[in-house]
Length: 77
Image (cartoon, rainbow, N blue to C red):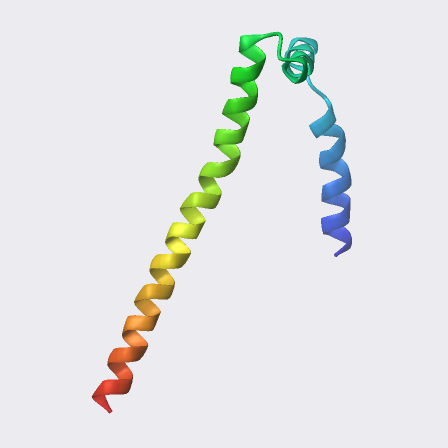
């Protein structure tokens, strides 16, 4: 638990640190002035959502397989 807390605190500083150009681009995205900034934010959202979609799909297929196997086991007895 302590190790997790140390890791989270260490990663906060790195998460805040950005190069000046990335920081300015992300800041102007909130104002809607820069197409590159909007593209940057869309890319971040894409990279964030994709793993959740993949995990959900794998979880659903696993659940479906387990349900099918359980049903087959109960009918064979």
